[in-house]
Length: 111
Image 1 (cartoon, helix red, strand yellow):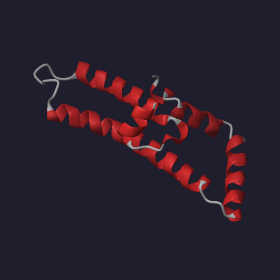
Image 2 (cartoon, helix red, strand yellow):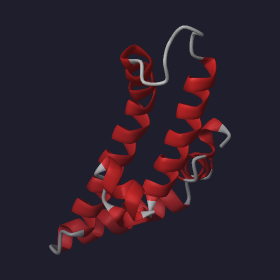
Image 3 (tube, rainbow, N blue to C red):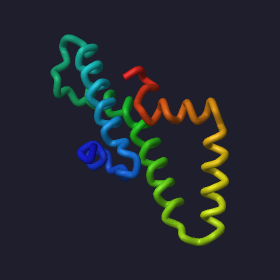
């Protein structure tokens, strides 16, 4: 878990580094399996394709964990009111909460 957090430079707030690492390994295996027969395993174009495929997920997790850490680090009263209001709303959001949970567990890509 911490190795994945460190590899992606994400805050260990929710342990999402493990999910990122598992998704990395899955997509890398797919990319290597589907590569053109004449490309080597270390082909720069192949590896850049893999890197681009992972970039959106990695950025989304990084922004989310950093944003949550920043929000919860604010001690002032207005911030605690906003946090509580947001958490209550999120808890009642139904489909949105379910979607976020699936994303966080890495099940969005059926891993």
